[in-house]
Length: 224
Image (cartoon, rainbow, N blue to C red; front, side, top):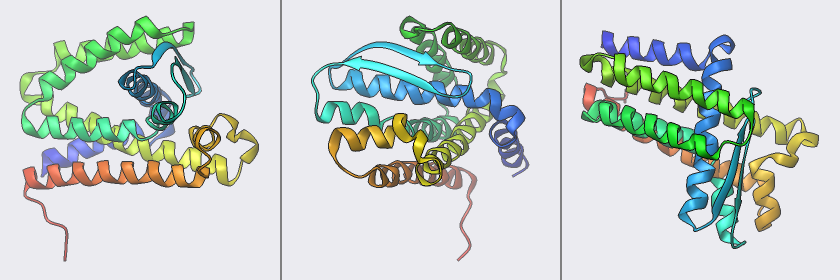
């Protein structure tokens, strides 16, 4: 339980204080934009570029047949840090932590091919450097701990980002033009609120899966 508490403290330290979120949030943005890119590639769309900014904003551009493919690629932004976070929690508890770190570092490195702005290059180079350092420097017996902490931090980050986009629609409607939920409304006709609820559903499902994996591994039970 002490190890679990330390993992949670590390995850909280990365994702809750504004001082650390300023940097870890950039990684969450990278995962968000890669979610758009992978979703676009899944439907046969051509990804032409990814832009990352130091204010935690980003833009992924893809071209292809319109319709549901566009909506699919647009949807998989906000939920993806939660999905990736849950996968990392699973990998950490199931013995796949070294593979998760190695694959993550490789994906980040290959993603440099799609970056189209200087700030994005710096952000991704930083992410590649950190991920490579984790692969090389973290002792084998601690790899699982690190991967679970990163997963939980991404799960927390997904909630922060969801709250931010909900705030845009609830309080700062003049800024909603580039919101994924608003773009989905424009492409499908379904209200932005529906898409926000779907984002929340995937994030909640990811949290549930992560909790199930962790509680099974640690022998925890929710109080009745």
